[in-house]
Length: 65
Image 1 (cartoon, rainbow, N blue to C red):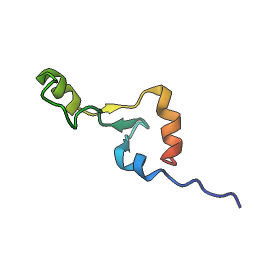
Image 2 (image 1 turned 90 degrees about the vertical axis):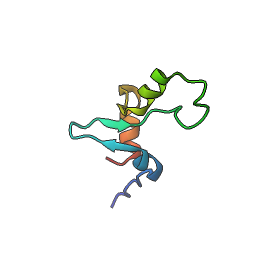
Image 3 (image 1 turned 135 degrees about the horizontal axis):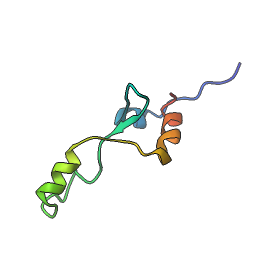
Image 4 (image 1 turned 45 degrees about the vertical axis):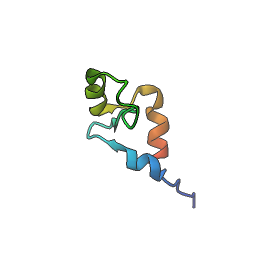
C-alpha cells in the first residue's frame, strides 16, 4: 500500500480551493509599515486574488488536493 502525502497545514490555512479548481489567496505586504503605503495600494491589498499558473500545481500538491 502506498503512503499518503500529508497536506501542508500552513498552506491549507492560508489558501482556499474555489469551485472551479483555482486557489484563492490573500495578498502580502499588508501587515506593517502601512504609513508609507498609499490608500489606493492598501485598498488593493485588501482584496483576495487567485494563485498564478506557475505556482498552482505545486500548491495543489502541498495542499494534497
